[in-house]
Image (cartoon, rainbow, N blue to C red):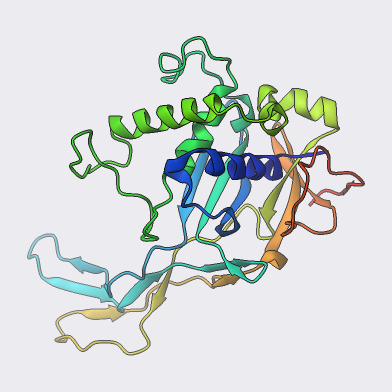
Length: 287
């Protein structure tokens, strides 16, 4: 079966070598994984998740009486923290998730990208999505990159028009650099074609699938004192995993309407050499 996330990761390594604006990215600090995203459903094709967001300032929730405005209840003080992910003993700074099979089946036709890439083949839409997510990585390691307008003013939104123009320019820059076709040929095919040609599509996931590392709420051990003007209630905090390693990664086969876990040995190889065409010897079982 073809390992889709491994192919995308190697393509990203080639992109950051060829596109100067992304050359600061160390792909050893980026983990590519997959989530289920049906082609027939609306939603993102891919998402960048930053693991460099600092802890929040201490805060609490509160409730007021609608009629009097009096504070009636408040929660304990808490902070929002970011989990830690390590692969090969190295801290991962960004996660990029692909929505499969939806990512595989995106095209230029009928999308906002159609006018930007006139005369290009449909698979270029996937290159645009990949560079779009890489561009979200902040070179200052302070979370998601802050966007700006064309005149350099900070933008209040994540995707101002200048962001899309920058991405399009980088896509053309990458394609103009004449990358080896073997690096991106897998993008030419939709999900069903890849599954038919290779016997299935597998991808890296977390063992806790469908969940993955996300920011979590943690109650402060020492609670600041406040006037007893309101009843204090405990913060509802689920048990969450705070540290992940390659032992927490898995591989799943993605299907048009679901997934199933597969057993392939190492879920996320740290050392890579030549471009992998197939993942062989896959024994699958439903989970």
